[in-house]
Structures are given as structure tokens and as C-alpha cells.
Image 1 (cartoon, rainbow, N blue to C red):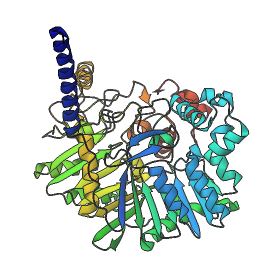
Image 2 (cartoon, helix red, strand yellow):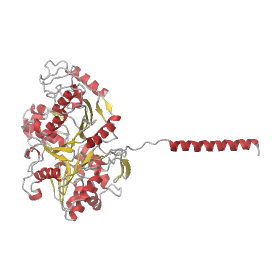
Image 3 (tube, rainbow, N blue to C red):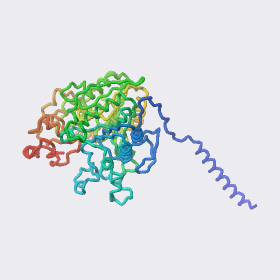
Length: 556
């Protein structure tokens, strides 16, 4: 054989051997593995739609992704119903959940549904003109519905597609009774913000998630989206379920009977915190709201504060909104006692003037050259506060805190004054190291690649505000201790008041606006942000005369 041919063959053999060796090494190299699922409490099962320890094929976009399938967990619980299913959720748009309820209704099970009035109308009933007038956020929700229901992709919804894809139409077609928070004869309470299901007065689903694609699975317009980060509890206990059935019945009244005997918001009778024990696990439950005439300590935020006060080692929080000053003050005291505080707040809310994330970082933002009443930036700021990095379109929608790796605070209740005194909410405090381990893992996952501290843009905004307001001589209210970073400000209100961010006190300072109307404005913006003066005209208590007084005094 020619010597050159031998060499060529030899080089080819060597190349093949090298490729085989590299492939073998690649196969032998350790691959990234999913975390091992944690043990579950025998009574309280915990799930997260972003959990790295699980995966599922998402039913609408047909994508395999990491996480627990929260919708399927809800469907599975409903499917066990023999006698009753009660659903109280702000928004229900998922067809598989609707179908599960319809199937139970056909099987003779008593099914009842309560929604928030903003979301109790089927999307398919909106006219093109109505859709065009929707705020951008709500129009996005409508477009998500169209993508979900449009099975053949022709951008037109047939009657069959609506009957199989519009969850509320599916419930209505099956004769399932639905009410919202106008059933008490009002134009709506604060927010009917509950997110729970009770099956056969025994099985409970309690979650931070609304029953929508964006809260559970992800957005159609963003294929990489995993849905807003949310958690879900399944608890099997008749004693606890009875408490939730009682809450449901207070809201329900006579249902569709026509009498305005439903009670929402502060119309509900006051009920103190109730506690039950399940094996070695203790659960305290409270339903918001609590009237501001009641002691704060007896409210849901009071329960959260009491729990935070017990911390001796650590508090980890993952919160959609954090705007309750008293809770921030309690955490400051914890910090001064040596408790390690870490907090992640959703990026849309972390750096607003009312966010307690700013307090924890020792700074404050002005609103019309004024600080929020009783604002108190920490004298010893911490650097363990920030925002999580999530997929495009996804929000941090959790409302949980973990104390000393032993106690979990969770539910539908945002850590805000509005949730405490206006909205129908659930807050649970669970003492269980097993349950806490699940929430600790979720927090650590979010915290691992979070962005901590103040963004440069916020630092510059604070600097600009100091320069703009430095000539105003009157100091900030003496009741509002501030850090050295806090500039002097006045009580001047000549600048326009932003209806979407103003505090209760700022709204009351407007001509013709008293405490009750200020509350109405806050409740209205929680349902839908103000985008025009016409939106203000829709608030109960605002008439043409008052609108004329306010038109040059407010913005949005």
C-alpha cells in the first residue's frame, strides 16, 4: 500500500477515535440535574409554577417547561368533588378549570363561583369599540384570551371556539351560578382578591395565582414566559375548610336570589384570627379586610407583623407589593436585633415612592415634593433587597415570607394597607419546617440571580428630586423620621396629584375629597389604573361639579 495512503488512513482513524473519545467524555460529564423534590407535609402540600424540581407539558401553548402544573392541581382537586365545589377567585379564564367545574355540575355536584366584578364578564362579549377603549394592560388580557380560544388560528372566534374557550361562557352555559362583589348592592367592594377553592367541605386549594394563562402557565405573546411566579397549597382538613366555607357563604348571601345580602369588604362581620393544628403543623388564618376603626393588631397585617416580631435569625420575603409602613418598621427592629432580612419585590413596584423596599435601603422618593406620611427610611440600611430576574412578561406575584426557616406567611394578601382595609383576602401563617423548606427553596432560587440594591436610574431620580425641592424651606412632617439622604420638603400641594400613586392623605387634601371618596378612588385604581379624567368621572361620588374642581389638580 502506498505510504501516503497509509498515512491518510491513519489520520482518518485517529480523527474517528478522537471523536469517539470526545463523545464518550461528553456522555460521562455530569449533566445539570433537577433538584430532588422536597418531602411534603402530610396535611399541607406545597407547589410552585416555577419549581425546578418538576416539569410538565403546558396545555395551551403545548410547551414542555419546568414547574408544577398549578392548573392541573386545581382540576384534580375539583374532580374529586362528590357534593360541593366553591370557587372564590379574582379572575377565572382557564378552560380546563371551567370544564372541570362543568363536569362536576353535570354529575350533580353543587358548584358556586365568586369573581371580582372587573373580570366577571366574558371576554367574548366585548365589542370591538369596547376593546379599543380598554387600557393597554386590559387589552393585553383580551388578546391573550383570543389567542387561547382561537383553536384554528384564523383570528376569528366561532361560536364553538367561544363555547370551548371562554371559561365564563362555559360556566354560564352549564347553568353554574356566578356572582361578583356587586351582589351586595354596591358598585363593587375593594378587590375581591381571594384565590381559593373548597371541595366537599374538606379539600382546600389556596393560591397566590389567578386562574389565567399569565398567572399560571405564561403569556402567548412571549413564548419564553413561564407565567407570573406563584405558589399553591393543597390542604385536606375539614376544620380549616369549614372556615373557608364560612367566608364563602358570607360573600355569597343568597347568590343569584336577588337580595343584596352578600357581604364584601368591610361589610363583612369582623372575625379574629383562628388557629388549627394538623399533626405537628399549626395554621393561623385571617380574612381581610379589617375596618380601620379596629385595632391594627387585629388585622391581617397585624397578624403578619406579630409573626415578623418573633424572628430571631432570618426573614426572607418574596412579595408582589410591599407598601405597609408598620411592617417595614417591625422589620427594621428585627434588623437592629441582628435578624438577617432579605427581600425581593416585583420590579413594577419595588422602586415606587410608597415601596418599603426603599425604606429598607435607607432612601425615599418624593411625590410632588412630599414624602409619604409616616415614611421612615432605615437608619441602618441593608443591601439584601432587590428584584428577581424573570422571563419577559412574568411578574413576581408571590405574597410570602419565611421566618427563621420555620414559619411561612402566605395567601392572596399583598403586604399593603389596601389589602388590609379594603380587599377580600386570605392570609395564612403556617408553622412547619417541612412547609417552610419549600418556600425557602423558592426564595433561594429567585434570590440566586436577583438584582440587589438601587438602580442607577433611581439614584439619579433621588438626586434630581433633592435639587428640585431644595429651595422649599418647610421640613417634612416631624412624625416621619428620615435618613440623612432625605431632603427637606414642604406641604405645598400646588402641583398636580397623581391619582394612581397618591396616598390617602394626599387625596383628602384635594378640594371636595373626603376620607370616603379618597377610599373610593384608591379602590377604583386597584381595579383599573386611571388613564383619563373620564375614568375619575366613573368613581362613585364624583359628579360634574367636583370633576370641574379637580380637572386642573390631578394627573394619572
